[in-house]
Amino acid sequence: MRAVGVGTHRNSAARMRGIASTLVVAAGVLIGSGTIAQESRARTDVQWIQAVRQAAQRVNYQGTVVYQSSGEMRSSRITHLFDGTHSHERIQTLDGKPREYIRRRSDASDQVQCFIPEARRIVVEHRNVDDSFPGLSNASPEEILERYTLKLGDVERVAGIECQMLTLEPKDTARYGYRLWVDRASGLLLRAQTINERREVIEQIAFTDVRIGEKIDRAKLRPSWSTEGWSIERSDYRKADLSQHGWLVPAPAGFRKTREVARRIGGSDAMQAVFSDGLATVSVFIEPHSLLSVPGAASQMPSGDALQIHGPTSAFSRRVGDSLVTVVGEVPPSTVRSVAGSVEFRGAR
Amino acid sequence: MIKQTVESQVTATSTIERISILLDGEMDRSDAAAAIAALCADPALRRHWHELHRVGDALRSEEVAALDAADFCSRVAALIATEPTVLVPRAPLAASGMRLYWVPGLALAASAAAVAFIAVPLMRTPETVSVAKSAPPTVEVVAQKSLPTIVNARGLSPSFNPYLAAHRELTGNSVVPRATVYLRSAEDR
Image (cartoon, rainbow over all chains, first blue to last red; front, side, top):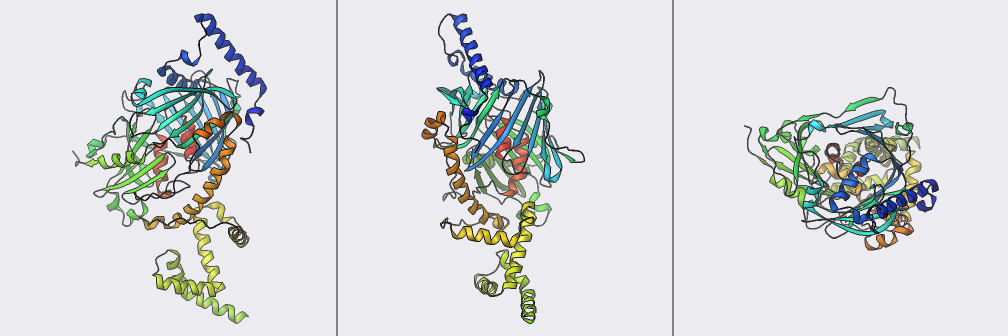
């Protein structure tokens, strides 16, 4: 199994470089301040969150990641390159069906291609900055810290690298907590756990081996398959205003609306509102008149008032008149239920 | 010999509809008992029953279609014979559309528990032992009494996949890596 003894199989040159850069930073701190300061002490709470965010976009890395949830385990290979303006990321699944995700992201756009070899199909997902609500793009670190308390934990090794453990404890029960292990030198997140209210780990993602800050060949960011003749499917949605259609979808406490769109969901027209607290997200789907339009459609859809939980994901469906309201999010079950319960139809304007 | 086969085929034809009803779980308890007895008694009928399942399975998964069915079933049967019985109370179902997925879900819950058991020690590389001890990854509870919960170990009910994909598309810009968003649902599509 790949995960066994990965720490010892790491590229020794990369480890030397890691140690060297740590030494350089440590030396810098010594020379700069004249005192023996811990790197982790040098960052404030806000700076830790900023460092993690920046590193995810700006640092080159490649490695193997293991994801665990609900007794499932999946591993995948991740390659990430920053070219000065764009961040390029390729994820190859190593278990189950072969899938590759290639993401190209800049400050203005974010596109992901999903490759499905057995169907010879590419699904293109995109998010443009102008799709998001004006002025409601990313939550600032300060906003995150309004809803979570950041605590510094011990220094622990992950994938052979010294990491600062951080805990983000939720200030209420509407959201889960997180434990993060961050490479002290680069700020790269090497391990993350989602924690429920009983302090159980309900989801975990971790590098088992990683090489940080090396030059990455562009060829490593291309898909494994020649995709000539593959069909391309583009996900399609457009900005919408749910209130204009008579729907009142209040934001759950400590979340704010980041997007409202109209789209197709499994063959029917739907509206989607997305809420975020900076870490967790919740989507509300409304399919107007969906239970009237097609005879027997109700049996094809999630049944009314059904709660489902899978790892960190909770989903709840509820009928409002002849419409189906479905709430999905990486939040506790009580949150999706209360969000679904707060959706109201007030009649079209 | 030939005559016998023809006879049983005639029997099978006359009960094909009843077999379908049984398969869909819509037969009365008393009728079902009779139909199951007929199934047990008639190899041709059993083959038909098996065919119907294969068609259903093939429609849901292209890999299953490629399996050598006869050999596959006997191997699975042999493996099941060596397995301990897992007793999980069957929760009442909210929607008939979920029926075909529910029973496999339970079987997967049992195998998922096995995976977790194997996976946890593997995650304990020497440097992470202390963490693993203080917070062992847990397996989701199969059924919760107080809520109308249907927990599917493999994922949410397949009817939720389009919602998950749409949710995933418009989220993921946070501290927790976006890769998580893909790995959560690696086989949705």
